[in-house]
Each structure stands twice: as C-alpha cells, then as structure tokens.
Image 1 (tube, rainbow, N blue to C red):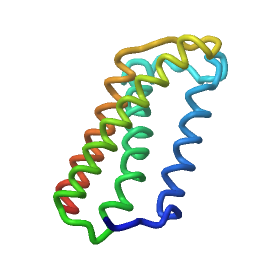
Image 2: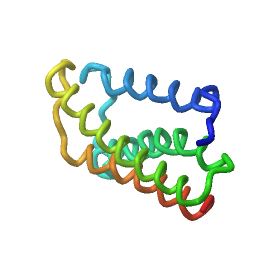
Image 3: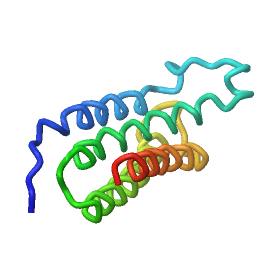
Image 4: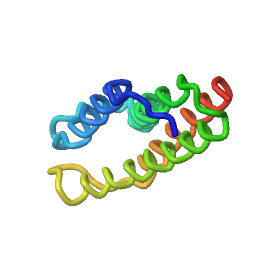
Length: 126
C-alpha cells in the first residue's frame, strides 16, 4: 500500500472547516434576496462548496501513482462521505444553529456537488 503525505490533504481539511463555519452561521447573518431565491442561489452554493470539498480530498489520490482501480475506490468513498457530511450538517443546522433549519434540497445539492467532483475526477484521472 502506498502512503500519501498528509500535507496533500491540507487544502481539503482547511476547506472542511471553512464549510463548517459557514454552515453554522445563524440564520440572521445569511443575506437574503428575492432574486437569489428565484434562481435557487443557495442550492448552487451548496453544490459548489460540497463539490469543492470532495474535489480537494480526491485530488491527492488522483495525482498519486495509485492504480486506477484504487483511485476509483477512493473517489467513491470520498463522494459518499461528502454526501453523508452534507446530511450531517443539515441536522447540525436544525438542532444546533439559531435561525437555520433542515432542508432536504440542500442535502440533494450537497450530494450533487460531491457526485460532480466524482465524475470530474473519474473522467480526468482514470
């Protein structure tokens, strides 16, 4: 088994904490705009931040000399873990953050972002 230097995961770890802070902002601190609501801007943001999260954790594996089969296994695991983390953050928002709620469509957007990162890495690096 090949080892990947932990420092290659620093961007993903840092982004994980940025996402956690953003998702724990109280509802009153989130800007609201009718135009943004019409284009479902928050769903695009969810897809983007979770897609980037998955991508940042996939890249160290993608750029490694692992066999394609091993890379694919890591990509799948990371996409699933990112989706589960998205669901977890919805529960955190519902039960622990003032003015925030559980939104199944947010989780769907999170999962779509993770799946998009998976698709990009699979096509580009395998």
